[in-house]
Length: 251
Image (cartoon, rainbow, N blue to C red):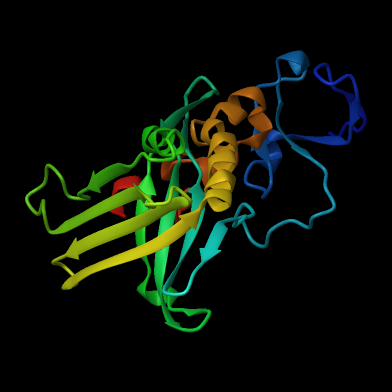
């Protein structure tokens, strides 16, 4: 069954939606929502907004990659978001299982404007740590410590310290990442100077993305929930679906 031109009670506009029955469960690009206004037709549970973008191949939800990059003489840094993780409930709803994060990736330069991203080091900032970062005063700083194996028998094998310090002339900040990895026999420090204007972009971007890391955008619009935000046992389209996101404390 298909219905086109369904009026939206929220926006007062006509949206080109396509409603499909549960027989379409497993098709790519279908978001999950509970349609209380269609209770008279209980088989209609999955929907998608039609778009000009072609569907992703296979049974995988489309993956979108974005970042904010800063390139300097000795190193470069990319700021990249990771989606939150949800779990489907027996009652048809969904609950957040894990908040999203923002990865800070720093890579060394090998020559002028050439960077070796194979040697990058990664630090995952939680929502609370992001809040600390964007509220720094011009002469303020912060420091975060991560041990991916904390509480386990191999605690201390990997230690990471992400430190932000103000420049002496208050024209920006130094972002430094110190890594001690006894597993891979690596000890190193990478740093990137961040100007005021670059930090302003970071602050604005982080302010925007925090509600999405908390999953609040899915609460407002359940259609935004897709396979890339579901735990492995909750995938719409594939019971063996494996997420490729890096765990928050593993980096």
